[in-house]
Each structure stands twice: as C-alpha cells, then as structure tokens.
Image (cartoon, rainbow, N blue to C red):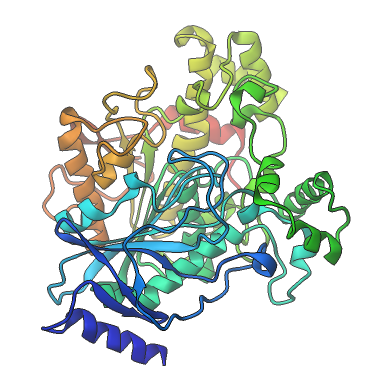
Amino acid sequence: MKAWCVLAGLLVACGDDADPLRVTLDTGVVIGVPQGEARAFLGIPYAAPPVGELRFKPPKPVEPWSEPRDAAGVGTQCYQTFSLSGAGGEEDCLFVNVWAPADDGKPKPVMVWLHGGAFVFGSGGDDFYSGKHLAETYGVIVVTVNYRLGALGFLAHPAFAAEDPAYPSSGNWGLDDQLAALEWVQRNIAVFGGDPARVTLFGESAGGFSTCAHYVSPRSAGLFARAITQSGICAIMFPEPAKAEAEAAGIAVAEQLGCPGTGAAAAACLRTKAPEALLAATNPPAPANQVHTGGPFYAGGNVLSTLPNVDGLVLKGTLRELFAAGGYEKRPVIIGGNLDEGTLFHSSFFAQEVPDETDYRAALARRFGAANVDAIVARYPVASFPGANRAIAEVSGDSFFACAARRSARAMAANGATTYLYQFERAPEGPFLQGLGVFHSSEIPFVFGTDPAFPLGRVGPGGAATAEAIQGYWTRFAATGDPNDGAAPTWAPLDPAAGNYLAIGSAIAEKPAFKAAACDFWDAVVPPP
C-alpha cells in the first residue's frame, strides 16, 4: 500500500497537468504554497503526537488522514521555556517542513536540517532556517525537523527503560525523533522531486552533535549519504553521560516533582506532570540565578537530564570512542566550527562573566579538575586576553569545539571517510552584543541566506560574498559529495598529518595545521581512547 502511495505521489507531482503544490505522501495528501521560485510544504507530521501514554516513548507512526492537509504554515514548536523565536510550544510538535525547487523531472539533492539550541530550545520552523533561498537558488530540497527538547526529549528513568523489552533504554527520545524524520524522508522525499539516495544530514550545535550521533549509529545507516556538522561538540574530551548516570539524574528530577521510586508508578506520575513543571525542574538556570561565574559549561551542577546518554542502543558508546573505533558507514563529511566559538557562552546572554583570575581558576577546576588548572592557565594566561572572561571563552572555544572538531575529523579521515575540515571566520554585521567576534551560531544566516531573520547578527552587504561561498560549498557537497566542482580555491579532503582546512571568511583560503598547538595540548589533557 505504501509503495502504491509513493507511486501515486510521483505521478501527481510530475504529471503534465499536475498541481505542483499537491503531493501524496504515504499518509495522505498535502497542499503546499509558493514561496518565490520555491514550493513550501510546511508543518507536515512525521510521527504521532508524543502526548499522554506516548510521552517518554520512542516516536510512533502518524495516523493517515483522508482529506487533503493544508501545509501552508510551520508546525508548532516543541515545548520550551526559552527560544530565540519566543518561548512556549506544544507536545504535539513532531513536524517537518519541506522547501523544493520547481519540478523539472530531475531528482534533486536533499538537505535535512537539525536545529541547534542545546537540546532545550529551537525549532525547524524558525524563520532563520527557512529553506526557500537554498531551494530556489541552488536547486536543492531542504527539510527542517522539530524534535522533542529538554526533559520531554531527554529525561531518562529506569521505569521508562523497563516498559518495553525491545527498547531497553530511555532518555534519547529526541534523537529517535530525528531518526523517524530521516525514515520519513526516505519514504516520501521522491514525491517532492528529491533523490533519496542523495540525502545530506546537516546541523549546528545540538543539531551538529546529533548529526555526528547518527553518523556513527548503525540504526541510521542507509538513511543519508553525506553529512555536515557545524559546531557540533562531537568527540569532546568529556564522555557523554552513561545510561546509569542519566537515569540517576532522572530519578532525582522525578522525586523533586513528587514522583518517587523506580517502578511503573513513577513513570505514570511523570506522564501527568505539566510540561512547564518538567522543564522548570531540568533547564539550566538563567545567568542571574547561576551559583558560579562562567556559565553552563562551568556550573558544576547536574544537567544530565537534558542531554543524550550512552544507552547501548541509540548511542552505543561515547562519540569519541565511536569515531576512533571506525565501525560506521564511511560517508563524505564536512565538519568544523567558528573562529570564536566560546564568546557567546561567556556573554551576559548565557553566563555571569568571570571577573578575575581567582574566579577563572575556580571555574577551570570545576570543569577540568584541579590538577589541570596550572597547565591551562599557562596555556591561556589572563594577561594575554582582554580579561579573565575572554581567556575562559578561548578555553571553551578550543577545548569544547575546535579541538573536538579536529579530533572527529582526524578519526573519520583515518578510518577512510572523505572528510573536509573548515573554520568559519566572518563576523556578522550588527551583532546583538559587541565584542563576540565570530561567535557560536553566527554562520546560520550565511548558510541559509536568511538575512535579516536571524536575531543575533546580520550577513549585511559586507558578508554577501562569504554567504555565497559557503552556500556554494554546502550545496555542491549535497549534490555530489564534493564541495568543489570548479570552485576556487579548491578544498582538499583532510590529510590528518597536515591538518589542512578551509578558512571561510572575507577571504576564502585553504590553510595548514588547524589549531595544531592548542589541540595537541587538549588531547594531552585527556588522551584519546
């Protein structure tokens, strides 16, 4: 029956007399809207609403609909207490949005986007992730995805893991939502004119981490042909929480909410709690309420209830271990980040700033252990920066982002994957705060061409050439697995010994020895597995 639906959808989408805004999915007909030269099909459910008894469970199939479904607006964002587009949302939030170019009968490359937001905020429907520009300018199909966030997406508890012997895990619901969306793409993207054999999974921050998690997961094999991870904290030196750690954190949250114990009664109780209560008990505190300076990376508290965990099923090991082991499908990959990754996390937006060297050392001890503080301060002395807060921002940028990207890239390249390493180096115009440089997430409007929708900074006239360059590399990679196709300068795959990477800024240039001294230092702090 599903095969017939897909065939019918192809006939509807490609027929001479067809309405290009009407497509037939495996669950029913959707009616899209024109956006410039692109076609938009928005707010399409890819899984059943995860509400009631389906809360804290893997996503279930969506019920088919009998009447054509309007697809003119993005679906409701997943519940969150903070967002760049406004807080709130609903639990019924598992939607995808599709932007497709005009159909010319030739299968198009597909780019599936996983948004960032630290696994606690964001939405595939945010204006600055619109796929309109990429679809109409470069002829790619863009799919953006909502997935469950915060406690609703990542709260682990032994009672949940005991409910289904076929799924002896808990706390990775958000990653499973993404997997369900990738499966939806494989079943349905052809009716929009897409090529299911040319799917690129790409994401930023939490979405970049998620992209890495799917890259090394055997459950995601065959669902995408290439990957791009932007600022993903993949193969970070600190291990992702183990299942037991995450479940212990979940038990503590449940007790706080009046749901004690580890059995079925605790699970039933948690399913009755309001989303606001669940998120309030788990989300990181606002800067004014933080106990320590240095922000979320240096809090010294327990945020395990909003992070993916190593459960042996969804995540079979830490990303650092899995990348090094090499037991994954070797697909072409682009990986990298931004020049000043750490500054955003140490701004007033996220943190109480570190005022002096005393607080700097205390924060480093909380995060890296007292035994490593002197070596880190010698490597990143306060006197070399405009104050202690900028010094710790540099520590965060190198240790959590740049060197994790190098570590991942070297492992993938050494294990036989064609790997392209980059660093984005163009600061946005009119940033929301001064002095942040090329901060975490500032490449978003450059990649999507969504200036001025992004609230943290503008591409502006001065950044137009950089935006065109990165869009070209990304979309050529999506089409062929090679970002070059005659582009200048040529971007060579990573040679782990040379450390070559592409600097994408006001000028575009390939450079050697990516962060060599800094990353050698951090690899020595916590040696590779």
